[in-house]
Image (cartoon, rainbow, N blue to C red):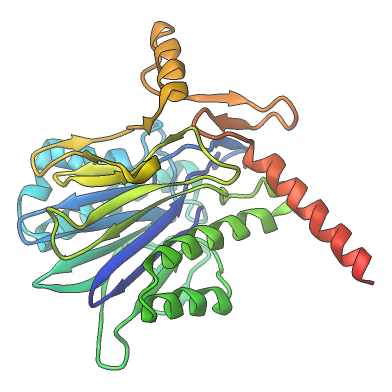
Length: 331
């Protein structure tokens, strides 16, 4: 499981998702740099897909790869949004049926959350076999349910989370920042909510990672799509979400930005960084590894993305110890 947050309102979409992948069989951390977010453009809509549940199937392929594969095989993002949703739901149902035989129904649970623009309006679509309405089931069902959540008078802001409990106070803070037009703060609050969820877990080694990928999507898909990467402790490079038939801008130091992708491309596992990241990537290339990878933390043994300046698990432990010390001091 993981944690994703998607917020839509009449003028935009903001989404954030953590990057941790945990083994379904052992519960151990497999990686802290999984990409659980795909920005897309299709014939009559554009938006973002994030997910929680299955991090990788029996073949080791992530749901982000499933979406890329669906585009390769069926060109689903070259048609209508409704057609893409129908294909994704049907494909998910087939994949979960196979996973139930090896994992059991309690672990074969999955949800796709789609925040999207269609006919100049923002909405959320949820595709899930264990979340429906306000109910979260302990076991995944055979059937996948598709639900739509559209803005209505008096309810213009819709915020949907999946994969973990989020405090109402955190959701209210996100909603308040949207109402006040502080969208940079909205993005930061989404990242902070994910980080807080991660750090609350025992030894910061739970199913939710502290770092996250994010995006902001406006109505104009040519010029109002931004995405990036929030890393606790700072980063050497930005590892943004994947792109399917859409371009996006990455903010860099000094007010500069890089534009990645376009309406005819599919882009995955990219990084944007300076000299240090370039040196690491070149060293990896000589070893047969494309782009950036992970190294073991010398203290806790958890895999740390090369894009990170510090180990997020060690930072989580240090934050807990500091918090406990402060509480003791107040007493």
